[in-house]
Image 1 (cartoon, helix red, strand yellow):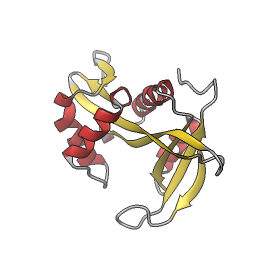
Image 2 (cartoon, rainbow, N blue to C red; image 1 turned 45 degrees about the horizontal axis):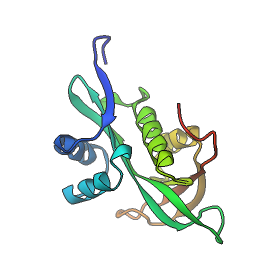
Image 3 (spheres, rainbow, N blue to C red; image 1 turned 180 degrees about the horizontal axis):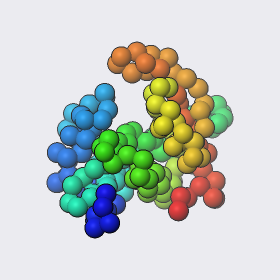
Length: 167
């Protein structure tokens, strides 16, 4: 990014779909079909965010709300915010873009009533694990052979408190 770069964080719009799908293909081994992106967007549009630099989409995150058993108590049900995917083009990484995208998405999930958050991340992706820890997530457990290539994932969780909103 140069000093003249125009960086915009905003909600995803359907016109962004091709660029988001291309980022997904370029950066992640899990490639989702178009209908999957559309479904996630329709479920919680305020948590599907993109970063745009000089008119080009360079990163995104998408999330949804799920109801189920709490990660913190087997006797309670919870409304859980699930970060489904986050990706930034390699040439734009390590600039805080993913952090800002995630903070916006987390805030949207909290505003829609999430009482806890969770995500899955490759055990080998230490940069992402550290990013999620910096945002308040903790590793709950390892899920063996979670990904198609049989790599394991960490299930990372965060309990929502009154201080959970991200600045």
